[in-house]
Length: 327
Image (tube, rainbow, N blue to C red; front, side, top):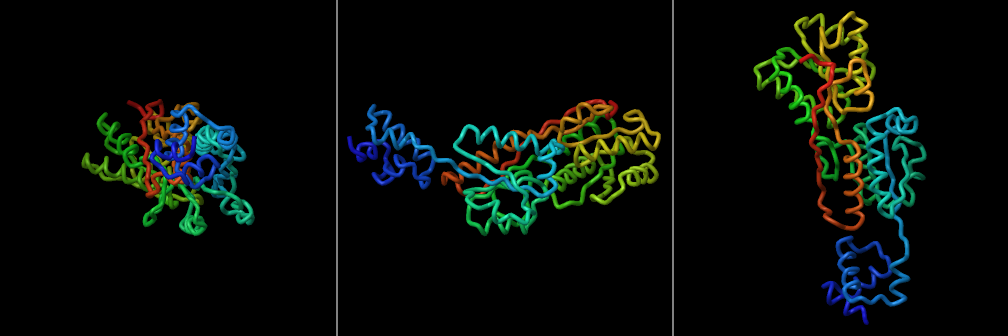
C-alpha cells in the first residue's frame, strides 16, 4: 500500500498524508482525522506508519493571569478562577497538552512564554497592553472572562447582560420597586455588561436605576451607608459579583439591618461561598468550568488551524434564588 491510496480515500495530497504520519503540527485536526480514518478503512498499517502514529507530540500552553488572579489561584482563595482553571485542566488532560500558569505582570514574562505555542489570558483585569503584547508574538491567543472593544480576538465570556437582566426582572415582577446597584469601575467587560442588564430591567419597568460605582480603594461600609441614607426606600442591593455582595451583607449587619427582612442582597457568579453564607446568597450562576473548557477547546482548534476566524463565545447563565432576598 502506498500513501497515494490513503490520499485518494481521504481526498488529500500525498504530502498531507506524510505530514500526518510524521506527526507534523501543520495539519488541521479535521484533516488528520480524515487521514487516520482512511488508513483504518484500508485495514492496513505498515510498521513504519504504526511507529509514526505512536509518537507523542505535546502542545505547550501558557496560561497568563494578572497578579491578582495568579495570587488568588496559588492561594486557592479566588473561587471563580479556580473553577475556570479546573475546566481548562480537564479539557487539556484529554489532549496532548501541557500548561503552565504565570502572571502577565511578572518581570520574568519573557522566560515564562518561552517555548509556548499558544496562550490563554485569564481574567477581567487583562489590559489592552497585555493583549497587544501577546498578539505581537504571532501565536494563538484566547481571552477568558474578558473582552475589550475594538479587538478582533478570540474570547470566552459569560452573558452578564442577560444574566443580570433576568435576575433583576425576576424580582421586579415579584413586586420590588427600588433596587440599587453596586458597580465596579474596573475595566472588566462582564461588569459593564451586568450593569447594562440591570439598567435595562429597571427602565423597562419604568423605574430609575440607582447605580453606585466603586473601586478597589472604596470603603464598602460608607457606600452601603450612603445608599440607605440617600434612598431609604431601597428594598434590595444588587452587586456586580458575589464577593462584593458578601461584603455588603456584612456592612448591612454592621449598620443594624437585617438581611433580607430590611434589605435584600443579590450577587453574581455563584461562587462556593454564596451557598454557605448567612443568609445564603441569591445570585447568578456562571458556568465557570465550562468557560474554561470552551476556552481550552477554542485554543486547541486554533493550534490545529481549525476555524481560525476570531470568535466570541458567550455562555448564558442561570439565576439562583436563595435566602438573601425576601420573596
